[in-house]
Image (cartoon, rainbow, N blue to C red; front, side, top):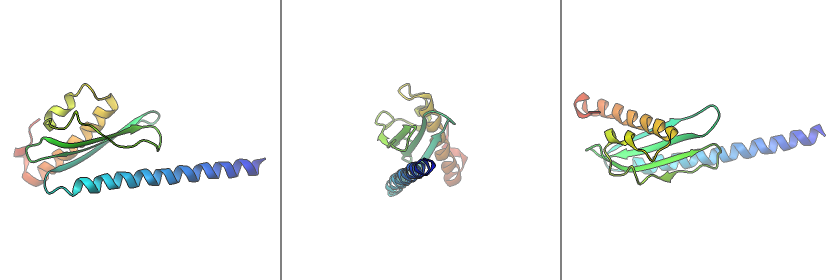
Amino acid sequence: MWGKFIIIFALIWGLQFLLTQLQVRQYRNHINEFTKRKSGYLGTGYYKKRFGTGALVMLVCDEELEIVEAKIMKGITVFARFRDCKQLIGKKIADSNNSEFLSNNEKNALKGAVEMIQKELKKGKGNEAWTS
């Protein structure tokens, strides 16, 4: 009986490992797709609870700090996938946190993505470009 339990546990663990690797590959593919842009800034942010639903946000903005591409992944399992967030496209970075259509988890992840873009701006242009 214990032998069957160990085999089933090992199979489930192996499947979870495989699905996690597929999710990481999907994440890397989206990052590579975003970095192929000729100009702009890329920001990623995540919010993870110990138990419950987490969220990951990827943003690309142009030099005028307007969001040109946005993707959100939220979920508990390795089956979560990125989806486009068309409501964010066209908004200024500074105004993006005022989005009522996002959940609290998504807003926290968005905040991290905006902070990452802010750091890139400070590193690249100095402090004069960012106003929030």
